[in-house]
Length: 303
Image (tube, rainbow, N blue to C red; front, top):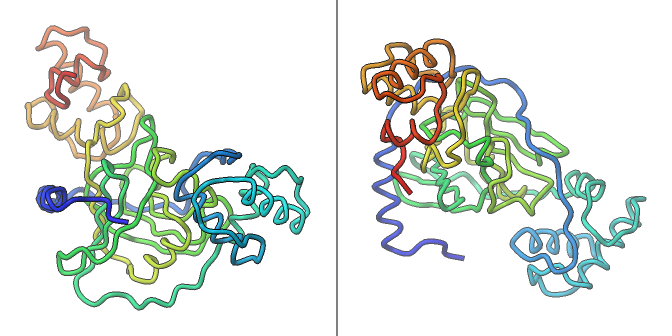
């Protein structure tokens, strides 16, 4: 399925070029903290249901078309899966069922990695992950990104760790060198979340997609996350961390209020810089970033 028109590809290409700048790097811990599952019930529809139906068909539990609609035939197949795995037979894809599915929805990918200079572009506007080889689009996958209050960090990163996980994190993990937290690209046992703002900042993929990407990616592969760093317009206060804090620090430095490192951590120096800005602009001196400060700094446009 083609997600973008020709004009959109041109816009995306120049947007990617704009983001190809260097940002500070740091060490990566082992795990991220993504939120829990939800239920799928009759009437739900989307690519997540198609993935579920494909899995159930491979398990010889579903013999209908891959419609992408959670209908009675799909619910009956889920009931059979639940019975086989000694789960409560509800016909809903509830938390115990998600957990069981996450352990089973694994595919064997044999596609060889593409030759050439490979890099990843994740567009938070279109919820899409692009694989570029020698600056040409080689593959495209749908993804889920961070919620508005826990945004996926916009910036230029690299893959610094790879691993095979299980449970709620899907089947594969590719960690990024984000200096202020644990972020990466991983699979999921919650395919309903793909195409939404659902994570704590990580990038989720369908398991079969992440397994294919995992084969192609090496440590050091560039990952460019593009889009609005202030998508959530969240209130920024001392102690917060994130890509939006990095862009705030850059803006404060441009304005002459901040002379420390760009680390994505809202610490004492950032707070003092914000207070100085507020004082100059005759705003309430809180040391926090709210809507007035977003506008006054030119971080967002008035809506």
